[in-house]
Image (cartoon, rainbow, N blue to C red; front, side, top):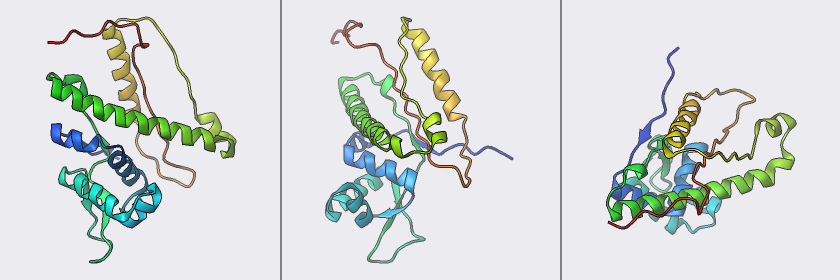
Length: 194
């Protein structure tokens, strides 16, 4: 049986800028996890009006993040689905001030969404069965290492998680792995402006 790799998009600068909007990022994440939805369904889910949600969906579609699910709906109800399972950014390769600003804005939006997801998971934790409580963790480790070693460890962790294939089944649920890896704030001298 061949392992199917997730479909990935690496947006250009304008696409990453469009995805840097927190609402668009949440909508895309929802479509990836929960599957196709209408603007009305998403508006209810995120406490928005359907006009605003439709606008965000059109922006996501314009940059190739979502597509209309033509197998569902009718002329009145348009269904949308994620076009890819993962988004990779070129944040580490940003060279110009504009590229860095866009990459940083995207990472800020993603960080806010990750923090909200973690908060929601911790609020739900008391309701989880013991096996899911045991499978979950909120941990941190701090080691003094050079940037090259940090990059190597981060790449190895990402590779390990990426090697995990979906295993649908009666007891299977979407399980989020969020990786945050960074120098402890205040310990790296700022980069000098070019």
